[in-house]
Amino acid sequence: MDSVPKSAASVKKILCEAPMESVVQVSGMVISRPPGQENPKMPTGEIEIKVKSAQLLNACKKLPFEIKDFVKKTEALRLQYRYLDLRSFQMQYNLRLRSRMVMKMREYLCNLHGFVDIETPTLFKRTPGGAKEFVIPSREPGKFYCLPQSPQQFKQLLMVGGLDRYFQVARCYRDEGSRPDRQPEFTQIDIEMSFVDQIGIRSLIEGLLQYSWPSDKDPVAVPFPSMTFAEALASYGTDKPDTRFGMKIVDISDVLRNTKVGFLQDALSKPQGTVKAICISEGAKYLKRKDIESLRKLAADHFNQEVLPVFPKANRNWNSPVAKSIMEEQRSELIRLMEIQEDGVVLLTAGEHRKACSVLGKLRLECADLLEARGLVLRDPALFSFLWVVDFPLFLPKEENPGELESAHHPFTAPHPNDIHLLHTEPKQVRSQHYDLVLNGNEIGGGSIRIHDAELQRYILATLLKEDVKLLSHLLQALDFGAPPHGGIALGLDRLICLVTGAPSIRDVIAFPKSFRGHDLMSNAPDSLPPEELKPYHIQVSWPADSEAEKSSLNQPYHPES
Ligand code: ASP
Image (cartoon, rainbow, N blue to C red; front, side, top):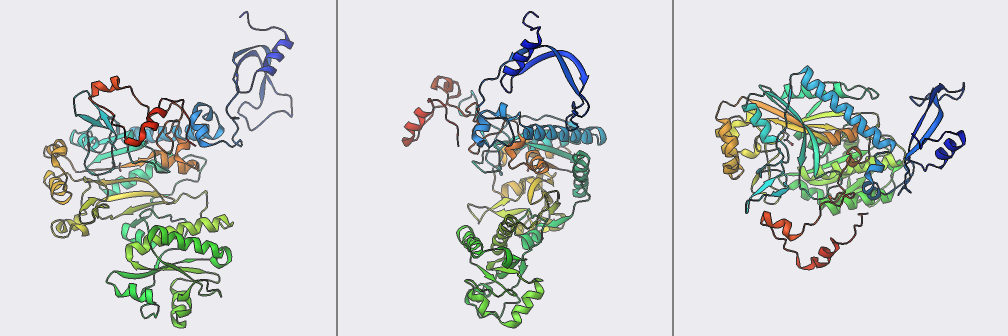
């Protein structure tokens, strides 16, 4: 090429003057590095090129930030220039590890277990029950598609269609507003099988994770332990317990039954009343008075629950009138029951079982954060603690109207065979065949054995959940055409990879994620459309009264979120 310089001086000039991150093409001879100059940390660390000619293919303009992992930049800036951020070591590592794991999962499912990789539509219709869906206008007046929250109906229909082992790396959509560790679009490893039971699905997933687990991490030990939902709630105050550390919730109602303390007496006199506690080992040594105060404030502000500290062995009584009123006998019983050591602090609360457990479950995690901030290691960062949570209730009271029921998982989940007789009399008591997979206190998957009997499915939808069955007539009809018993699961791929890589956010394992507020900060989506482009969809925007300013700001140059 004419432009290829010949002299050593001009080669040097091109290479020295090329700004950082430019693209250059060099040709020359590959030679060994002089002895002592090898770099064993680089795959090409033993060689170098003796350059004959060089050409600048693309000179990099001044960068908005330096592409070095240790240079701090705001996430908004990283997302605005995502294509540059992707060049960072961490993003390269995360995305390459994700790709390798997905490849292994495909191998395991398709090559070793006969699964078929099938794509399902993303233009679909509204599904009753479950998360809010994104709506897509169509050209037919008043008709809309919805983006599916998961391929749930399709995967069940595939079982009816004789594709008895389905899987898909499936894109799912949920319009759930801003939540710190959620994305409006995310990816599931979606699986369904015919003629399978809970144990069958569980061992398939254990094998899948074991097979695809990165070789530089400690191997995954199987089978994973399991715990019932009731036990998870009672001991950890949540359906996704972090089992890497203890500090379990203990019911101390019996110890304090004859207490003189008014608010405990009040709670215990109610039919569902309990007194519960957690013990923070070494809490008196590592926690400050203001820490305990902030824990109490959190309980009061977010749970409307009073929490009191008790120091059964350490000689402190901050703000704890209870401590003085606890008799010696009760104190020793508490020490025995909760195995309290020197410097242990007890956080105690009273109230209805579920509420008392929830608040202590939250405080348990807060305490772990506080103790770790002070240098104690409660959760080994190299440890991956998997857990199955099983025997969920089939229904929960609806959040907005507790008199009505909603599905704890989704309306296609089969009842527990031992509880079917309760469906007509005490539906709230019915357990389900739903299982969740939890990793280090995060739900990374969930699934169930499905209802394959149209009659039972119709009863649950129409009578118990009060859903419009017409919306699901295609599924109900399909169940009547020789549907095999079936079940499945979906793993949340983004969260799984986030935990495996130790990334601070799921956005760090997705190439082009949305911001906290659901925006693409690089391209500025979602964006406005001129009225004439909305016409074919029979749509008109009705601007909220105070949003004139907002409307005009949409036409202004773009400012990233901070
Ligand atoms: N579709 C379900 C979900 O997204 C998973 C399943 O039941 O297989 O949670």
